[in-house]
Length: 434
Image (cartoon, rainbow, N blue to C red; front, side):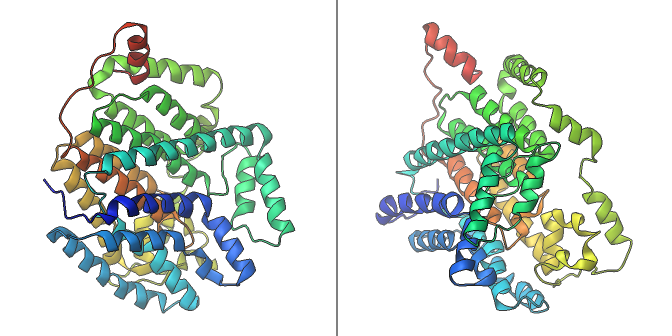
């Protein structure tokens, strides 16, 4: 049992840290933060840096008192990654600002992976965190429905407000094309449709891992339908595969309830909710051109992968790489192009090995599969590898909460929820699909 040596300060500081998570990701997202910084101080790429999340990480590091051998090894490996990152970025014309943005947004979040809430207050704080997060996701879903009905009405007003105030909305025109095109794909101030898919799927997977760990019932059917509606409005192919796969995994011991989900999905299908996603599966390749672009990349010798170093952040966005750019939607390939193959293997490999060790050593196979599916999903688009996005910070928040939930089983009694009888019991039984 690993309880660690937690200071009393943690009981008071961790609520601040969790609050900073919401501020850094949702209250001051990159599209707002960078625009405000650019207008007031003209910092260039410095405005990409999520200073709120950096502050949260500093507080976490100050609280941590013990480091396991594996964590020490990981820290050394991650520090060594600064060498190929520095050498590679020195080859670009973006200068110091790009170097700092890449370090703070695509490297520093790694150190969130092994941060732990104290066991004596972990359950309570994570429960509160998830309640707040659930409310945010429900608001996102309501906003997505409104945007669907109005073809991006709120977003058009947001763009107008940006223009009136001289703010630069990065990628806003692309997002507007998604929401006024066919099919409609929900984008927002918080990012691309695939970023919003990541929010919706994390909502279902994190809640399920938490309630699985504390052995409490929750209305799984409702949570699934909220996530499903959100993913369908974003029209994410990998996201829908991830969500449905984890639904099967999380209900494997209660197969008799699959017909309830099937009935709910059928109702949504006949209401037309699946038409856009079916259209994308029918009219596009599964990889949406990524594999075709990768084949084109390997057929030439333009910017070939190197073992120890790469070509620096942003090389995939050079003009001559335009036809090959979709290949680097896969973060492992973008890491390899930017900083070298070894860098990519260590980045992706250490994250996977670490959460795998925590889950499987505790025989939490379902939770491990959920985290693995989510990790695979976010590795099919380039959000976590871009120094201009907050997505890697968000992935590490997901990992931190999920691993802390898995570890809660070390400190909680292994008891099943008490049965509830009568009409209330029937309703709970159906909603929880137990």
